Length: 144
Image (cartoon, rainbow, N blue to C red; front, side, top):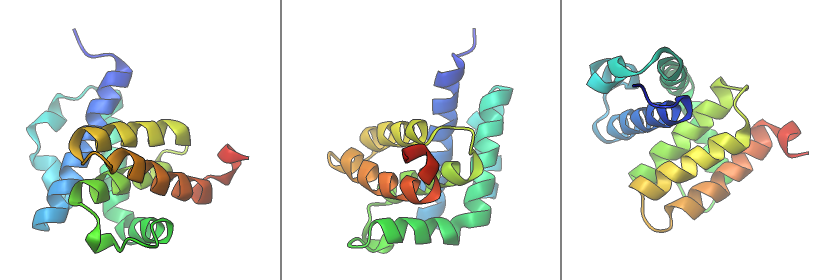
């Protein structure tokens, strides 16, 4: 039996997080790393579409994604962020851009869960603070 859709979407986000993290550390392209990931082929259609959208958005918009993060985390240069925090922030900002139908609060909650799982004890709070500022800039109507 397949995983529930929400669980499968979370799994897709975690896979994209892993790809973003690996790309950041070794410099390979996100698209190539995604193609090489065996778990990607095992995803059902809906979560695979989500992951494809996110990897595409990361590849196409990385510079503007990084600008959004840098602006929201003004006291933390991007290069000084932990690689796990940087990867989860990039993933979430990509989703805010590429998937306007996903509520910003869902994007933030998912990112915080990933940050808590893979980052430090402070990662969840840090990611929450930065993403809240980014989301309010990218999707102000959702916070009115």
